[in-house]
Image (cartoon, rainbow, N blue to C red):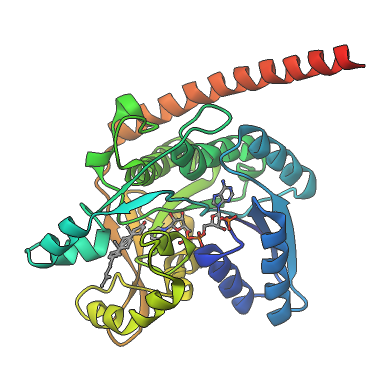
Length: 346
Ligand SMILES: NC(=O)C1=CN([C@@H]2O[C@H](COP(=O)(O)OP(=O)(O)OC[C@H]3O[C@@H](n4cnc5c(N)ncnc54)[C@H](OP(=O)(O)O)[C@@H]3O)[C@@H](O)[C@H]2O)C=CC1
Ligand SMILES: CC(C)=CCC[C@@H](C)[C@H]1CC[C@H]2C3=C(CC[C@]12C)[C@@]1(C)CCC(=O)C[C@@H]1CC3
């Protein structure tokens, strides 16, 4: 039986690099499913993968993690297509409208915090969030809640007797407890919705382990380091892509001091790939697995304790369950009203 691997946000960056790495190690024994919001970009990614691995099984799935109805129909489709799901990579993520604080950056360069600043981006980035058509904060909906709903919908194939399945979250070193507030889990009020959403994924992973390990479902969190992708190119919009490339020698230099500058999607996917090869029972639920690249360009994975606790993770889990039931109620009402309006039209 081939293992089934589903990757969200698989058409570019770290997600696509992970797919490439998975196929390079095992073309025959895998059924890879690329879950993407844009099917043209998904097709292009599939073609690229099949060019280097012509015999691979690569399927596409339409999934917009920011949309409740899209997540629910994608999950239905997965359950129809597959009777097992061995790995679910929760990788799709956004950081829209980033604002880079040049002054704080320059101050940081001449401070003791320079390494932390380069490793985490702490103190130099804020974002402006928006609201989805489901009335959720967009970054929260995309990075965490859509994924939570997906897991809940896929429970029947993720938790099967006698089998283990793995959930693997692409979190970030930018996840900070200080950006997260249990009273405002969607981060409606602050200026760091990205950091808050990533910290929420760290907490949620811990809670999922508490609730599902007995049923053979394990959750882990990774940090890819700083990788040049569409997401990071958006940070300095005045900088075209080629200028980022020109900065590469500077980044290689910085890498000598902080091995978190993984820079390429291939390197960033190191911990995602490493986890694929691990026994889930051997992993630490309180660790974040970091993709790191040494000054000489060698990739490795290192676990580091997360700043999370069971009590807060449980509290977040309860809030997500509550929001889930509200959202399902809202969806039912929306479907009822669309049915009614189409009835009147006919
Ligand atoms: N690059 C970095 O330095 C770091 C990245 N990360 C995380 O890594 C993950 C991958 O990002 P990265 O590869 O860098 O950036 P990319 O922008 O290249 O990849 C993000 C992927 O997520 C997809 N996506 C975005 N929104 C949605 C949505 N609503 N529904 C479905 N898919 C969606 C994108 O699709 P589309 O092409 O259609 O936009 C894209 O395929 C993210 O979770 C990010 O937060 C974490 C730490 C550092
Ligand atoms: C020389 C020069 C122009 C440096 C600019 C560096 C910054 C733009 C980067 C330094 C550390 C980076 C970083 C991220 C974004 C870009 C930096 C701030 C992230 C916040 C991107 C998203 C994440 O999830 C974590 C990254 C941490 C490091």
